[in-house]
Structure formats: C-alpha cells, structure tokens
Image (cartoon, rainbow over all chains, first blue to last red; front, side):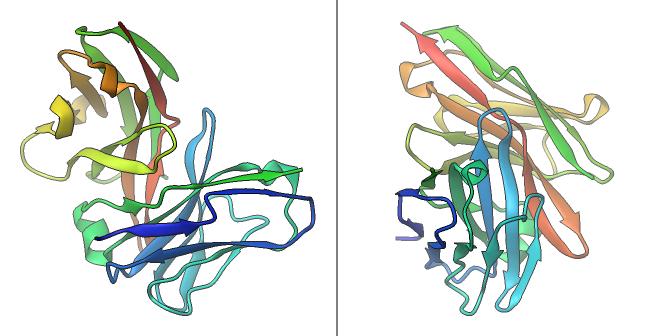
Length: 116
Length: 115
C-alpha cells in the first residue's frame, strides 16, 4: 500500500530537549516536504526536498532542521524545541514531475507535538 | 508570491443543504488548484484538482469546484451535505519556482453539519 508514515503520532516534550520526527514514503517519490498546521493559518511549509541531498527552506524554517540522506526518508529535527513549536506536523511526498503537472501530494497522518 | 485565501474559518450547514466553501488565489501564472479534506485525526486527502481543460471539476464524495480565472476563484460546492462531510477543508495552489515547487495552502474552513 502506497503511504507516507510519520512517527510518532503524538509527542509531549520539554523545552530544549532535542527531538526528531521521522517520515518515510514507499512510493519512490523525489519530492518531500514538511508542514505545520496551526488554527486559522492552514498548513505552512517548513522545509522541502527535491531529491536526495537537496533541501531548501520553506516559509517557516526557523528552529527546524531536515536531512535527506535516502530517498524514502525525510526526518524533521528540532534541536531545541520551544513552546511556539507546539503544532500539528505533516509530512508529504510527490513525484517531481507530478508536482509540476498538478498530481496530488500524499500526506502522512500527522504528528501532534506539544512543547511544555 | 502565490497565496490562497479561504473566506470563513467555520461553516455550519444543515444536512441536505448546499455546501459552499470559498477560495480565492493570487498567482502570476496559470495555477494548479486543489481542494484537500482533513477528517478528524487524519492526514489530508485530495478531493479534487484543476490543472488545465474543463473549468468545472468533479471530485470524490459528490464535491465539485469551478475555476474562474476572471474572479481568481476556485469555490468548492456540494449540493446536499451529509453528516460524513464534517471535516476541515483546505484550498491549495502549486507554486512553480525555479528553486523548487510547493503547495501553498489557505487557512482552512471547518465544516459542521447539523442534523
């Protein structure tokens, strides 16, 4: 089954404690992206990756890091989480050509992060 | 820069009534437009999309949307709401950039369906 898998689904952590949210896709997609969802603001892009070892900032990259060492994985790293990073996070993937043609992006189930 | 505006963060409709969710976009090039739906505790699922061709597009679950270039709009409709339509809906546009492409989302509209 084609899917994007995020882990964990729920996470409560304390300010300053480094954490990683994993994202894996089994569709051999080149393009992967992270979004955060906040009430009234919709989904805002944090980082995206066009392919292995190619990443770039989205609209709200501050406080986040990513890496793309393998095509299937795109982890989101919070080196020193703060309460304003409490949010719902989504990973998405798509083919590169698909994104250009308007083919849909596939989304993970989301990770609800609370930083206290 | 491309942007998407959804009018109304919350919409309440009666079961069987028309559902109308408004979306306006700004784009310097012909856009690719999408509607996604998010059911409680789930990820986003594509409802429908417009790329080229027919401006009235039909999606899953009886939804449709019409692309109106002159109005820069892509409103979503469903003639008769069902209880299962209670969800949050997001309009999105693809931004094609030399440095990379991305989906830009509107703020979302949460739909409540009353019996």
